[in-house]
Length: 481
Image (cartoon, rainbow, N blue to C red):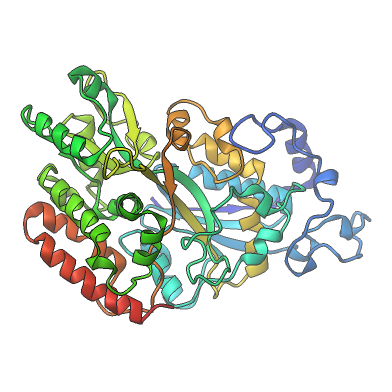
C-alpha cells in the first residue's frame, strides 16, 4: 500500500527533548557505542551546497543564524520516493523524521512496492521527486532509462560534503570501491551519479540443514555441482531454482569473473568486439545452459515480480537446493513455512576448475537525484544524511546494511556469516554492463537474463542465445555513451 507521510519540522522544545533522550544505539554505524556529538560540536566545519548557513542574519530568538548550517533551507520541503522492499517502509519514515530533526528540512515521503507505477505518471508530466531510491535491475527498468537519457544529476560533490550532524565527510564514511563502479559511475567519466545504498553479498542460498542431513558437501567446483545435482535428482530434489531471471544479473557477473577474471569482465561489460566468441564466454554460456537442465521446471512460470516468492519457497520446501539471491532473503521469507531443520546457508559461485578463484557478487541499491528535481541542493543534503550514524542505525534495525566503513563489525545473527564471506578466500565481484544510448527492443535484461526462462522451458537453445547476445552486443557497442 502506498504510504505518504509529511514529516514536519520539530519545535525547538521537541528537538531538545529528542536529543536529551536519545543516545547513539550500538549497531552497524561507524563509532559504535560512542554517543553522538552535540549539535554544537557536530555542526562545526559542515559543508552544504551553496554555502548553506553562512548568513549572519539573526533568527527570531536573537540567535545568530550562522550557527545553523541549514538556514538557507528554511521552509524547504523535499519529496523523497523510495521503493518498498523486504526491509519495509517504516525505516524510511524514521530516517525522514531524523533528517528533519537534524536539518529543519521537511520531507514528503512516498514508498510503494511498485514505485515506478506511482511516480511514473507525474514524472511524465515534469513533476519529479527530489530524491529517488530505486535500484537498477528491476523489471520496469526506470533507473536504467534515466541513465540512458542522461536525466540523473551529477552528485560527485556530495562525496566532499560533511554528513549532517557529524564531522566526517561522506567520502570518509562510504566503504572503499563503492563509488568506483559502473553502478554509481555509469558513464565511466570519473563522476558519481548514483549513491550506493543497502548492500548485500550475493551468491547461492540453500538449506544447510538439508545438506547436513543428507551428508552432502557444498560444491567447490562446477563439476562437483553437477555431481550433487545427479544425487539430488535420485531423491526427487532439483539442484536449482531462481526467483526471477533478473536475479541472474549478480550470478552472471560473478560467473564472468570466475571464467576470465576482472579483465574479461571489463571487456564483456563494455561489449568488446568478439568477446562473446571467446573460450571464457563459452564457459559462461555452457554453465548457465547446463544449469537450466538441473532447474526445477516450475520456475519460469513463477519467475515474475508477483510470484517470485513461490520459487524461493521451493528452497524452503526442499524442492530445490540452490538459488541466486542476496542477504535480504532472510527477512523476505521470515514468515514463510519451511521444512524441519531448515537453516540458511550461503556460498559463492563454484570455481570453474579446482584451485581457481570463487567469486561472490556484491549487489547494492542506489539512490539518485533526477535532473528535473526542484530542490537539488536540499536533496544533496538528504543524500549525505543517508550515511550518518543515525540513518545507518535506523536502516540496520530493518536489516538494511549501508556500505559504510567497518559496518560488518556491528552485525549479528545470520548477517555475520553472510557479510564475512569475503574473509574466507572468496573474492568480491562488482560492476555491471556499461550504459548505452537507447536501442528499440534491446535491453541488458532482455538480452542476457530473460532468456534463462526460455533455456529452462526448452523454448530456446544455447546457440540461439549466443547468437542473440552477439547481435545485441554489437548494437550496444555502437551506442556506448
